[in-house]
Structure formats: C-alpha cells, structure tokens
Image (tube, rainbow, N blue to C red; front, side, top):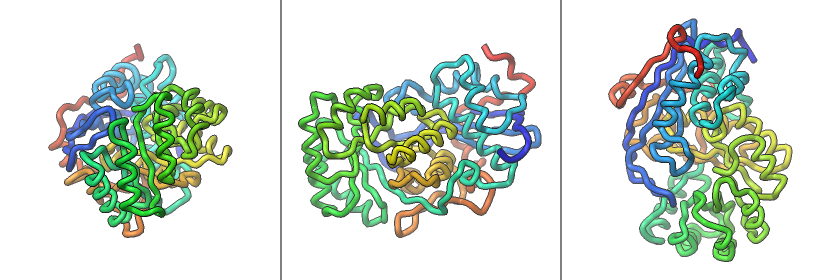
Length: 385
C-alpha cells in the first residue's frame, strides 16, 4: 500500500435529506426522501475525504438504519480508528471488527472513507488504489414497482432509449409474470433484462417463479430470504434462469458457501452491504476464480456513494452492467460536481485523471441539506466501550 501510515484526526457525521425525483417502490417498501448519512474524514496533514453510509431509515433491506449506524459510529467504531497509526486501508476492517459484531454498513462508511483518504494522500485515483483496470463501466437501470404492466413497459422502453445496457425490474408476488411479459414484449428478445425480488418469495413459489424462465432473463435476483442459502440452492435446481444473490452474500465466507451449495450463479456486490472494499475485493476474487460473474448494485446513493461504486466496478470481473445510474436518474441536484453522467452507449466514465473519488463535494449544498451533525476528534474520541 503506497504512502506512510494513515492517522485519522477528525470525523464529522452529517445526516442530510435528499428528495428523490419520484417515489421508488420495491417489494418491502417505498421511499420519496432519502435520508443519507455522510462522513467527512480528515487526517493529521489536513487531507480530507468523504464517504457515505448506505443504510436506509427503515430496517427493510438490512437490520441497519441511519439511526443505528449513527449510534454505532459514535459509540463503538470511531474510537477504534481516531488518533492511531493505521498501516493502510486494508488494516481498517480488523480494527473495526475487534469487539464489535455486525454493523457492516457503518463499518464500511469508515473503511471506504479510509481508502479514499489513502488515495488522496498518495495522489492517485481511488479506482487505481482498489485495483480497477477499466476507464469506463457499463450501466444498468433498476426500475421500481409500477402500477400496471403497461406503465412498467413504458418505463423500460424509455430506459433503453436513454442508453442503459441492462434493465432490471423490481417484482413482487402480486406484480411479476404479467409485468415481465409486458416488458419483454415491448423491448424484444435481445434487450438484457433482469428481475429483483428483494426476498419477497418462498420456496413454495418455485413453480410460479419458473414461469419467468420463458423470458430469457439474465437473472432473478434474491428471490428468497436473505440468509437462506440452502433453499436458494434448491430453487436454482428448478430454474433455468440464473439466481443472483444480493442480501445473502454479506462477506467472503457466505460467497464461498453460495458457490459450494450452488445457491446461485451470479453475485451482486454492494460494498456497503459487505463491510467495505476489503471484503468486496475478496468476494470479487473468489467469484472470479470460480468463473462466476459479479456486478455492482446500488442503494440509492448520492454522488459520493456512487463514486465508490464506480471505482469498485472498474475491477475486471464486474462483467455485467451495474446499477450505476447517473445523478439525474434520481436527483434534481446531486451533492457532487461534476454530477455523474452516462454516455450515449450506456457507460459511466471512471475518473482516472485526478486523486481520490474523482468528483468534488458541493459543501455548500451539503450544509443546506444537513439535518444534524457531530464532530469527533482524536483527542476526545475516548476508549472503545
């Protein structure tokens, strides 16, 4: 790892609220305003980095929320890293895991911020530091549940017209086969199409889910409960369509278990879900050795969180288009400049010509959107409890 040891002098937590351009609906709930927890990190030399905790305000995707992450960060996690010499960002995860079970999204917010801090201090792009090799990455879109099959088909048609290289549809037991059929008919047989259930089904729905085989889908993402690798393996045996696991893969060990059991054939890697970049890179490598493709999912991040996803998606085994939609897909105005954009061919450019994230944080806009903030310095961090 390039450079001298990292020494974190100060961290400011900020909660902002960013309104979505339209309501985003999945099988477990919906969102109109995104509460976002941001971290501003500063080292002893005054180098600054920003990161984002990707949890939501409700525990419907994972047990973590903005409020539980705030508590975990201030009471248990920040005291473990503030004011101590750390031998590079690879070493951060072990410090955060020492005596603290769970809280992977809160831990990832610190760990990934330290990766950016190291990149800024070394004067190199974040994507290069994490091992990325590509200058642009293919982009897909995730479309939330819609009121009717024609409404969903129209959204999908527009997405293809905009250049997205993969269309992913959220589904639920009440809105699946007829909706997917309408989209496939509207888009034709050649458009890459996937569905995401967000754990809305059980194994008893296997015959029903098998009806989706008729639509030549890239994948059915996370059809069953998050921790149920055994039943996912049983379901995969009954489906021609590849199962992709998202919520079920929380670390390298569960990825290895998935492959050993045959629980799926594709992995969605969200760095916040798996505890940060170190685990994300290890999952990438495990899947690559097994010949299993991976892709980078999204959590309705701001442009700060998007920067980390783009850097990760530049690694070589991210073969499928990620949920890396440009800023304008979700926000009237993002909190970074330049905002993230997508070219006409459906690719996002990986910033490789400047250190760190490759975008600037609009601090004035962040300040305007801030609902609460708290700063922790090395001298007052205290002893981990």
